Length: 288
Image (tube, rainbow, N blue to C red):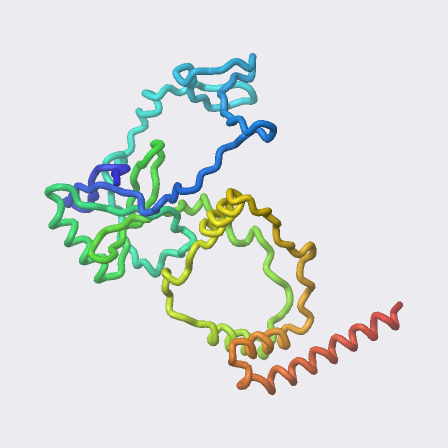
């Protein structure tokens, strides 16, 4: 495994030489090529200029920023590299925060950190303290592409890891979607809580598997063996609105084996909801 970045973690007067590795295993077992349907000829992507549709070699391509419609300022690689950032070779820690205070929505991409020669002792000390205090070190670092990233350095199993964080302005505020209208009834809240309690389990990441790749491999083997592939039927319409929420919750609890304790509540609430729905239908008929 090759490192993607080498530099140092810095805080105060401490500098720890490190190497950064990707924390994600990329499975490249299945790779599809684009083909022409008629003869299965490979499709190649070409770089062509809009002005004359001619192919353009890589050494003729430059980067340009469009400051007005159709007008560009061209930036060379040397000019792009002149942006001076301290975080280019140093992961400079600016603060330490409790991990529990970081909203999970900010976490983006995981990396593994390994100590380089001479930094083992300081590395071990930082990992030990971070793990003991359940703290994350917040720093900035320039990774591939020359862009500066915000990262949270944390400890896991006596090793340091880093997770790239989204900057706050990169995330859509939750208010862009509307909140549901209507008041939640106490009986609905109680039954929903009981359903959640009946489904609680200890977090075990090994219990959750990505079934898509295995299913895809099986599908390819069936195709190669000459078997006819038939797509399963999928519903064409969306589920109808739930009128009696309490009754649905009661049924869910019954399936999970937790319905006995709320059976009376569910039945009485269901009858009330049914009577309410019946009155509503009667009013609509009279109005018609």
